[in-house]
Amino acid sequence: MVRLDEVRGALVDVDGTLLVADQPVPGAVAALDVLRCRGIALRLTTNTTRRSRASVGAVLRNAGFAVEDDEVLAPSILARQRVLTSNHPTALLLVSEDARRDFAGVEEDQEAPGFVVLGDLGAGFTFDVLNAAFRALRSGARLLALHRNPYWTGPAGDVLDAGAFVAALECGAATKAECVGKPESAFFDLALDVIGLPPNEVLVVGDDPENDAEAGAAAGCRTVLVRTGKAGRGVSKDAADCILDSVAELPNVLA
Image 1: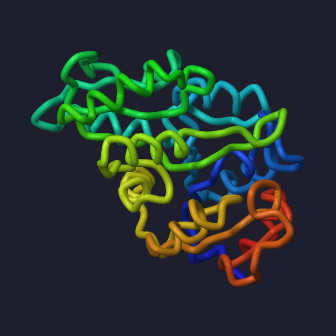
Image 2 (image 1 turned 60 degrees about the vertical axis):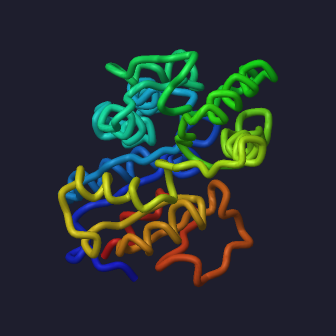
């Protein structure tokens, strides 16, 4: 059991943990309210790239969660920082129109970009779009992947995600992507820096055994997996420090 007096902060995943198909997991809103009342610092983590940070915050608020936009941690934060601090701060942005809001200050270059930034374009992943990215990579651009998730689960079921297209471009252009989303250590370094706590005092809560549990443990954090998303019923009991049916049970475990 995770001891409450040893946990001062929590990095809680959004999709599959707090929300399923944009609807709140029963009891999740109340669970986060209880943690806040107990003084637990919270940041909400996501690999979502179709939406901007502000839009993720809006979806959470519409679902009943009392969150601020700056409490949402997404790969776009790191990607923007990576491009702007490079020696070639231009990019071909393969992200949705909404997600472009998170790339303020990044100059887009269609001809000779320093980076190809790849998020989830959904149906926008046409041959012409992918071929333009392929050509930019062959001309020297670096591939910056917001994450490697191969799929996500939407209202209509499982849907291809950006990771499948990252793999295609890596293969076609004979390159290796730099990834900034979960489960990369850079993402958790950012999250721990933002929450301002040492890893042994932070709990990582999510539904993905690799992106949340394994990565959280590698960062030195405690870990909790919930069965409302990817983990399901078949997850090993050793996959995390604690496995719950739902995040609604989290206040009872932190004791």
